[in-house]
Image (cartoon, rainbow, N blue to C red; front, top):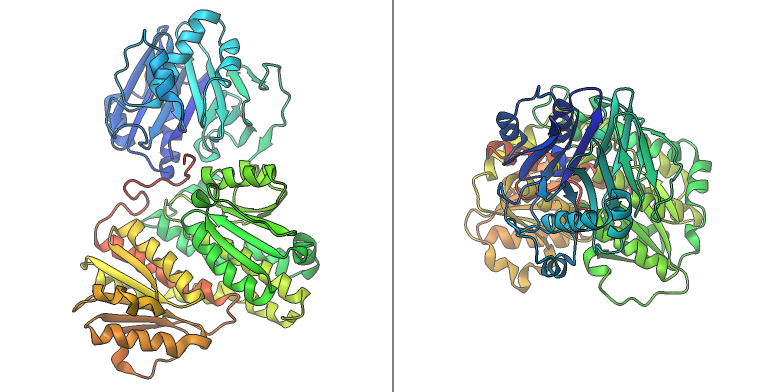
Length: 594
């Protein structure tokens, strides 16, 4: 969501900024722009739509060495050129990621300015310009700014007459990259990897001054701050397609590797499992909090942790949880799930929990992210860089981490024995087998891609899996898709079923298999086209148009195979419909605003 890139150095800045913005396309955006200093003046170019449109309007070889760029995901004001960044007011030009909540009251106070956009960002530019006209010193301005703005922001700022970049952040991610040829600001590490893997992490209320040869970082009071220079361990190659038609497909095929990268240190040495999970058994109640797919994976985790950990588990959407009253037990743990570690609503829950003295555990993919830093404990998944907006491999790794928590608790209370670990050891080979022949998922995609409505059915953990499967389908293909608890059909939902309506049922739980099959009979009787994903033969051939068989595994790991099949169905439907699979409309990869 909203990418920021800036560069000042010995090399020409425009190619570096454009390249960085292209590396951040996975975050989702609807316009792009750049501001750069040339002959002492600030030039601004911005266009609605893709970065390709922006590239057509600029000369990449302009003799400019300092600039800032932005990809916008619309929040305040519709997607259009006027609302695009950078915004220029007076002597100030800036790019902004985040949402300033008090922009309307600020706008009312800034009566001397005429605003041309609908954005909160232009108001921020006007505020900085006013403060700068009073202080004549940007460092003093930034000290004041953080006490004036309410909300989230990462800002990259150019000042007329200065060959520098200023940067400040609060609750929106920002890093500073360091190379021999110059210095960068960026929303995320992939934006700088073509040029450097060394960076500083900017914390809340910190700000920085970048020149071609130097970086000075300040704390919230304006004192110089000494920070450790970090090194990113990944590679730019991880963010490239490597011959796959889409990043989503590439990331689906990376799942056997990243799953083992995530779980191997635990399953091949149970001492590591006991060390990393130590103490989780003391909690009487666990709240799992996440957004989107992270919420759905929490529902799977609830099923497993309740069954094997013998804990009371609640799962909530982060944006609801933070605004709801909670009655905590004596020993309560909140597990926060976020791929980026910067998800705004989830981060807000974490901070609220800390204020109330509740223990927190984060499951994240990004080392050093805000949620990882601020949680009491953190378990890292190792999904690597995920470029496609619709998560696949990060979801799978999150699922496996929750499975490991259930495994640990199950071993502790003697519900499970150590032989269960063998189920984890072969999961990568089983996924590779699924990926080696995708004919069954392609056939279903061909059968349903022209329909307007698709329904997923399941019970218990299969219902949780149906919710993610349905989300994946509508995210990338734009088909209307809903997941329903199979037993709820007769309470109203079955009225939506008509002749030819596709219904995909997930049936892997032996305890309620027959119950779910009876619900499948109900939709078939109303003319539905029935498809079943299951781990056991369905003897009644009248219950399905197509059945997808997966190996029968322990439920601690079997859900992974179901989701790989569902991801492939979503991918092939989107491909048949000619959708922008990696960058679905209106969506952003990292949701850093509420």
